[in-house]
Structure formats: structure tokens, C-alpha cells
Length: 86
Length: 130
Image (cartoon, rainbow over all chains, first blue to last red; front, side, top):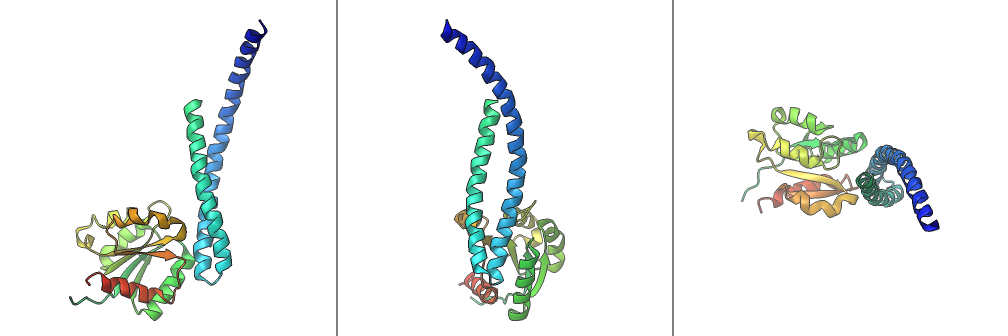
């Protein structure tokens, strides 16, 4: 039964992959902290540059800030999903 | 109704560059007496002694943000009726309606022109009793 053989092999591979995925989850949780730090820096640049007469830098930082904010939500969603599944 | 003049402002901001320019503006242009605090915790320690007319609070601060700071300040009986203004980044503007639930007079969006800030605060202050 090639199909059953495949299914059996697939389940073993899937279990091994899930174990590796737990390591990836730990890496993502660690990266999430860095992401928060990055967001904080960009947020500071955006606010302060606008008040000290560097509007172009402020605007560029604001665009990145918005992007990081969206990606932070997506990153949290991904981590939650992985925690649920693993 | 006659509005009492705004004199003393307790300003809470964690970013030192913004602290500096706001202090310069409010003291030199606005002639306000300013107490600058770098965190919500510091504001809670200083507020009762300083006896402010107004709280000016940055929204996004580490540990205790502006809304959390105001909530704690309002638990102090002598401070519970002190009006507050939030300062928020452009990126947080869509959260303005939730800030208004805290009963703040108004919300100032960063970046703003520091030269205009004293006039903006004066207008907000005078509008509260209008």
C-alpha cells in the first residue's frame, strides 16, 4: 500500500518538523522583543525629528512606524497561532 | 464664565529631546511654571507637591503609559479633578476616541510646532469653560 506507506512516512516527518517548529517559535518570540525595540526607536525618531525641523526624516520614520505597527500585530498573530498548534 | 488662568503644568514625557523643546517653549513663550517628569511613576511622586493646574501627558511611554498614569493620578483625591491633555504620535491618532474616554480636555498630535504649543494649550484651557 504505497499510499499508507506515504502516510506513515509523512506523519513521522510532520512530527519531526513540529519539533523544529518549536525552535522557530522560540526564535520568533525572541525577535518580537527586538521588533518592539525597533518600533520604539523609530517612534522616537518620528516624533522628535518633526519638532526639531527635520520633517522629511520624520515622515520617513512615520511610514516605517506604521509598517512596523502592522507587522507587529501580524507577528503576534503568528506567534499565537503557533502556540495554539504546537 | 471666568476662567482661572493656567499657570502650573505637570508635563510627563520620556523622550528627553522632546522634554527639552517643550520645556523651552512653555517656559519662555508661555511663561508657565513647569514640572517635567520622565515617567508616570515620577509624576505620581511629584504631582501632589507641585499642585498643577493641568496634566500634560505623553501617551506612549514605557512601563506606565499616559492613560495609565492619568488613571493613577486621578486616584489621588486632591488631583482627581485636575484637567489633562494628552500628547500622542501621529501613528496613534486613530486611538483618539479611546483616549477621550479618560476625560481629557484635548489631544495634541506629535510632531507639533513648539512655538504654537503655548497658544494651543491656552486655547484648550479657555475652551474648557466656554
